[in-house]
Structure formats: C-alpha cells, structure tokens
Length: 307
Image 1 (cartoon, one colour):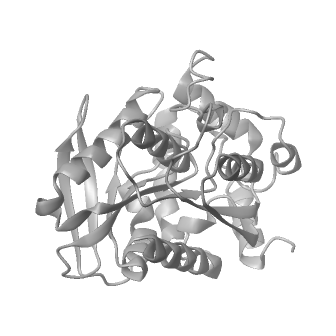
Image 2 (tube, helix red, strand yellow; image 1 turned 30 degrees about the horizontal axis):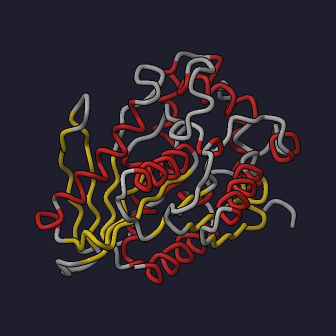
C-alpha cells in the first residue's frame, strides 16, 4: 500500500513549514518546536479521571499522569513510556492516545515524564522508567490497581525503554503480563533494510535516529548493554509476552521485525501487526489519521486479553 493520503498531506505540510532538522539547532529549540505536535494528537475523549502527581525517582522527582477508565479499584495497569528520541516530548503529547487506550483496554494507564538526554543520558531515563514501575507496583493500594496485572509499554524511544524495563523485570523476577512495543528502536544498527529504504522523506529519518542515539548513549560504551540496546540481550527467554505494532513506512520497521524474531526464537509469545500506509508517529496522532484509532484499539484488545 502507498502512503495514506492524510500522511502524504501531513508530510507535505511539514516540508512546507521549512523546520530545521534536530541536529541543526540547539535542543531547546527542537523542544520548543515539538510543542506543536500536540495538535496532531487531538482532543482527548472523556474518561473517568485523570490525576497528575510527582513520585520520587532515583535522581529527581518525576511527573506522572494517571488515566483511570472506571471506578474499579483492582484494575489492571499499564506503565507507559512516551517516545521522542529520549530527548523530546512530554505528557501532553500523548494525552489523547492514552485516554483512548485506557478506556478501550480497561486498564489504568500511568505515564511518566522521565528525564531527557542529552542532559540526562543513559542510564538515567531507563532508571527513571524502571523506578516508576517499582513505584506503581508498591503503591497499588493507593492507585487502586491489581499489582499482579501489570504491563509496560511505549512507542519509539519509549518502546526501547519498555523493552529494556521488561528485560530488567525478568532479571529481577518482577512478573509482567505483557510488554507493548510500538515501533520500538531496539538496535543501534543503521544498515538494516528499513533504515536504508525509508532513510528520508517519511518523517523520521535515519539521520535523526543516529542523532537521537548519540544524545542518549553519548559514545559506544553502552552498545552491548541490553538495558540500553535491547537487541544486544544474550537471551530474551522469560521476558513478558510482547505486543509489537509497526508502521509500513518507518525506518524502525526492521528493528521491530528483528526484535520480534529474537523474542520468538527465545520462546516468548509475540503478537505482531504492521499498519499499512502509515509512518513513524501515527500511533499517538489521533487527530491526524484514523489508523491511530485502529492501532490503539488493537493494542487495547490485546492488553485486555493479557490481563
């Protein structure tokens, strides 16, 4: 399938705006420009409640947002890590998507605004995300959730963080019901088929991913650390069952394919779905494309089946 018409228009509008590439301007400028991405996310649908609070992290207090779909005080829960190349984005960018995901799945969704690179490189964002999972599990009564029905999830860089948290949860014997990986960046290999085929002109570029990885890892000393680069794990046996969602025109498609194959090869259940005509970022862009609704509802149904 060719690119969906709404994605073609979105890309044309972005090109016409003449915005600089991430590596051409200071990080502060890219973050300011990314505020406009909320427009693609759309208006959140009604939900039972949304609560903002801070929790203690390893090196800083962390803002979290709790999306509750109903009054059930023993609901399953999803700890969600947003995308943005470990550098950009914030809780508002994902508001509409997570309202819908919570409503459709019946899970309480807890989203964390982890600290960002380059000021806070690996392992700080990863440590923040893992600490959030531990906090959620230990504060289950306060949150009104079932601590035995937890999952983790994220998109893009957040998918990397979710995959890494799932590996550490396996290592620390903390059971998870599932991991939701939405076009995750799981490897630092820029020679893959999709990095070559979709290097430019599809939104996220291969050059941008090289820049994002460098902001996060700042050298090659962590390239073999599975908590930084999940594809480097010696084995994925015993990690949580996986729900993997990809976009057809995304430089990260090969990452999803290769990681799913590694999971399956190590005996992990994998549910994999690619959305045709879509590019990177569509999952959270509720206003921009109806495929966002389809992907969110697909994820929600699979989550509900796991918990």
